[in-house]
Length: 133
Ligand SMILES: *[C@@H]1O[C@H](CO)[C@@H](O)[C@H](O)[C@H]1NC(C)=O
Ligand SMILES: *[C@@H]1O[C@H](CO)[C@@H](O)[C@H](O)[C@H]1NC(C)=O
Image (cartoon, rainbow, N blue to C red; front, top):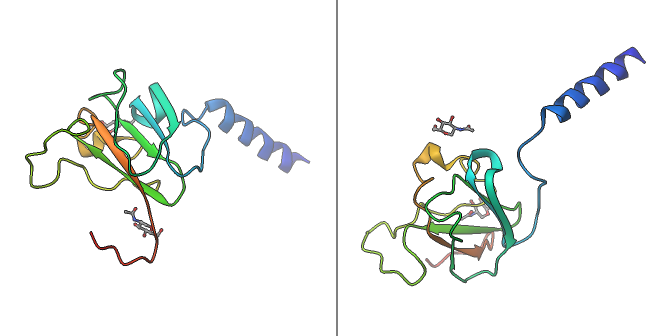
């Protein structure tokens, strides 16, 4: 009894402390984007179509430290340039593929990208598929 009460107390304390990270979603194309790390500040969550470029809304453009794709088999490429923009960098103007496994998805400040995302597109991750670029 005492033991379970302790556990319950711990859980309550843990919950009361409050995880700033919103409820986990697991939709293909679902992405949480926020101004600040750990899902804080102004956030927008939506389920986006794959293979389609989206410009970030005004409240988030060049100001997104959280870019967290849902836990589902897809990944996104955040871009420096707006959709249809001309990229002059050999690196493709993207920070690379970001999936739910990406370790910095809740703090892009760690990789210096919190002031750079302007647009993104997402793609199905066909695991085991021979990717032909
Ligand atoms: C995010 O990363 C930056 C740079 O590493 C760090 O200074 C900051 O404390 C981190 N923020 C959070 C909420 O973890
Ligand atoms: C695709 O999924 C596999 C298996 O989960 C993973 O190892 C790989 O990193 C993913 N690719 C991308 C681009 O996220």
